[in-house]
Image (cartoon, rainbow, N blue to C red):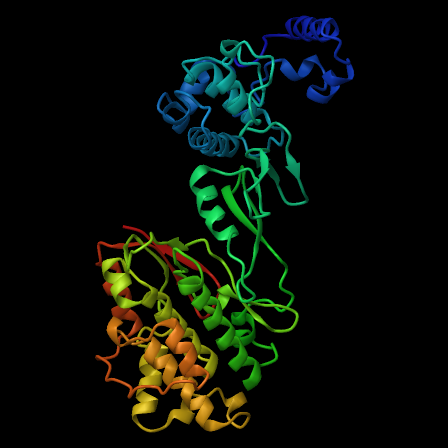
Length: 472
């Protein structure tokens, strides 16, 4: 049975627990924080989908649930414990769905009890199992130490509540990363490694990372959060494409483009080894109170090894912004970010999205801009709100650099340093090379779906902000 059979048994148990606390000189008030009374431990068929015994559990959940495969072995490591936590949240969500009118937490407790007492071969008294699953930092007998085991549970018993939902904090370990000032609140090893790289970046055109954490809740599962300074003017996307938002002036657009170029130049050449952002787009460019641009969201960033010229990696990013050689073959270089930057320049200059997902025959903004320039109508690329604002030659130069940066041929794209010098007028722009036949949205999606290198590619719709993910 998951709980005690009757009230007498529950009363006897809680009385014995209080006596044990007294013998340890622990305040009796501690009991009231953990339990509302002995009735809490009396079995009730209505507690969680009719489950009372192990037989009931097997009928409802089965012997081969995610818990059975994820909560075995040594749960001391962050990765193993995270897998167990994720499995527990999913099983709990399933159990709650069997009895949606019940609002208590019994299903969560049933799940934890099953994981610790049945699945774990070490049992609930093992310090590793207790710390991970039951949130009980037991003394480690094997070490003969009276110190509590490091950290607390990923099945943390103390819930974070707000008006919308209850969150389960996955860990409360907190430390300062060396030489960064960014704090580690609760996270898995892969996420921490990635965030540690990002937290070392400091540049006026890059958004500094203040901290990060991982949380989970019954409804949404695990969420990873990056903590940045608040940017009061939102994202570049807000100002370019949101109806009703005041349009950006030409000086603002020019400065934003230059700011982003400087931020990317720092990532590529200002630090060693270089970092490739992999997701340069309007939604990831944030604007501070002075409308200065900050490159943000380094969730996909990759740091290369010293001496490397490229990486072959799984593809991640956003349709339209991905360089063709990266999208199709997983070949990631500094020129991959340059391609995305070129797309962004053309979006800023034209006020037109990279592609219109509502129109299957829509051209990429690069092909459209190239057609306009080839027909000697470069002014047709300019957003109508800035046509008469700036010097035409300078605005034309920005369009030309955008087209050059977003060329499909890697060798024909400039480095970000050269692109910045072209934008600032320090070096001449080479003659624009011809482009292959334009790619429509339909063709682009077809290429991606049939490429064995594609993984987790976000498709951003122009009619809404939803994204979906294409996986192999």
